[in-house]
Image (cartoon, rainbow, N blue to C red; front, side):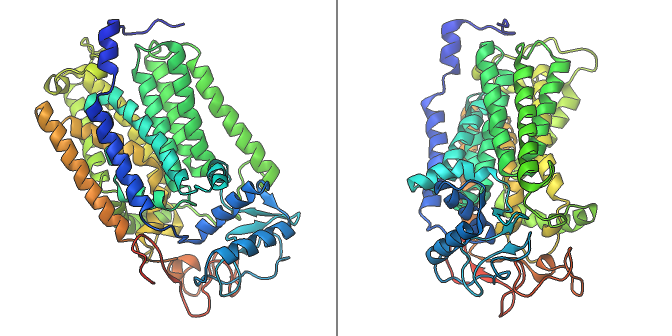
Length: 518
């Protein structure tokens, strides 16, 4: 077992590292606000995606994993069709035995039972969505508490953020990070959508990020504890990747961060830690490749048809034009995150030594020095720069990827639709926002009050955002069907196909916390 890099006296270290009641109460209150706001609003299936995931989850509780026979598919669709209510929805693709690869959305002119599933060449049916979330949500559906599924994984994210941020930033850091994570409009909105994986992915990534942050900074902890905590962090991120394959960029950032630390400061990591963590990532990647090959016909394929999901540089400028407004409304704390990155970078450039490593050593973050002293410490600036760089890489990797996403590169989408692809990294943004709050040039008592006030303001903005997403459209025609006069990829879309407007024009549906009719 490796000797810890830094050892503090036993009793005092235990007292200093134990969270206080004020911290716990603040974090628990923030999570309680999230739960109350979400559970006080009646659930609603607001997009075809909700129906797709619901079909997979319900099928799994019936003992049917991944694929269904034609008879099972139509029995499930009829059952869920009756339970959906008489809301207007898109028309059916066509007969049940349609050509392989056709997408089905529901009965013509009525609510869908099972949406966005595809018929495989062998005649069986499978959801086009990535397969991970039904495995995570099925136990809750089986118990009849599906609404608790996103909240459970959000609670895991809060735990990871609390201990990771506290290890990095001190006593105020954990509570501030949890407060920012729970009170954004995006968190409230997607925790409310129980059949959507968005907030679950955010919770898992936050839990993994916090666990890895604690592991890499808690050098006084035992090697075994650090290895297992880091492994759990990787497993949490891998679960988020299985839920949405594009989250693999976050897993890649975690691997690169660990490798970079191993190369630059090999004494920080316990022996064998790298083998456990990277071995987990490699085994996961191999397992997903085999799964995709067996189910979808190729290691890099998914349930989506080739060309249906498009990324390209031509979409970057349009997304830069349309997305900022959606993101500010859904996640106003991103302003704090950007300011924190700018401050961390400027502070490192101003204070980091030009040659060699700093000679001053930072005290354990659970017993942190006076903030004014910490801001002047080159070692503190160096560590914050390293952590900030890793968090920024995770944040930018997801947002940079979806900046090239063609589906959001146009006007007319609601915040509910457009922002969901950017939500999984709100944990990293919350950590950076917490850094900013804990480094304000104020006395400790004023810093605590200011942090509480900022979190309360963010909660107010989040609830306002949550209650103002009542009206949305399923997508403007130029996004769903291609530019005027130009068919979408794959040729002309048949009337009534998934994504084509039903009789009466484009879809205008009611959804969201307001419950107002569309």
